[in-house]
Amino acid sequence: MSVEENQTPGTSVVPVKVSKQPQMQGLSLEDDMVDGDLGDGTELRKTHSSSSRKTQSLGGLTEGTLSQTKLGCCNSEEAMAWISKSQQKASWKIPHCGSLNDLSKDELKDRLRQASEAILDKATTHTKSLLLKSDERAKALEKEVNSLQWELSFSQLQMKKAEQSWEQKYNGLLTENKTLINSLQERESEFQELRAENSALGRQCLELLSMLNLREQRVYEGSKPQYSPERNTSVLELAVLGACRCPGVVESCPCSRAAAASRKRLIKLQQELEAQRYRREEALMVADAFRIAFEQQLRKRN
Image (cartoon, rainbow, N blue to C red; front, side, top):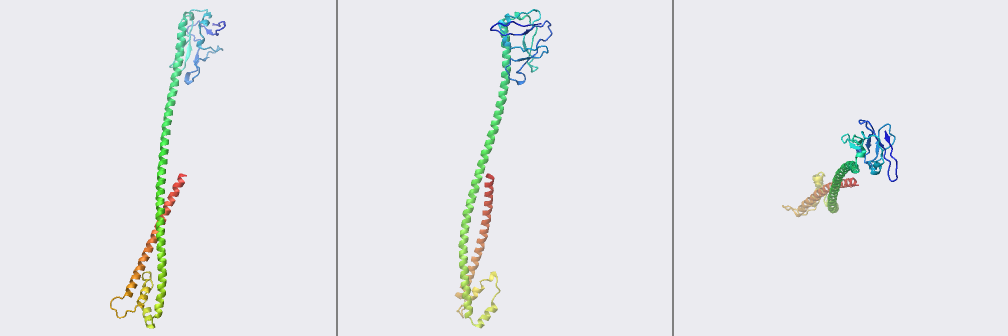
């Protein structure tokens, strides 16, 4: 049998259900904080099929409402209690504890305080666990961010050092290349001078040959060696020897010495010219290689 209390000013209506049977469960209520739901902890839901009204918070049980409650049965009264932590669901049941009239105001306040403390402890524990997990995640993310920042700064530093090293090498090669180009230009100018001198000596040779008589010219034509790069100074030597006016001299005359010296000088200049050409080709190849590598580094950086 259910009894409704009369509403008086300043008090709230608390529906109380009284059951005569000791083993019947009057209400099966679920707390909205179960399974991590952080609600207000006081809103309850009825699961009984015959009940259509919602119960109010346990805090509505005050002394004024209890004084106005009329109960018809004193042997099997049911009161609210907190149970079943192991089931992970908070529920309310009304055990056999005697009449509600037997409970004093202090006992009701103690039970209300205990229920509130249990709810608050559970909410506090759940909140602390969530905060602890959030702190752990934040620390892990902070460590990962610091690691990534360190790797990024280290990569930037290495790239900067590599760029400076390549720039120094490139500048050194440019300086060396300029030096080699200047030296090569000087050698080319010397070679042009020697070529002009050679052409002048060739004209002098022809003039000297024209001054010889027919017999001497025939002797020269008969003893003239075949032209080859190794013997390209034979014309100069013969021209000098043909112009020699030192008959009857047993030792080598100054004319033959001048011819031999000119030949040695010409051969030496040709060897130096070939060496300079080879060095220039090598310098150009190395400069091209460093230029290509430097351009690739710039593309990767961009």
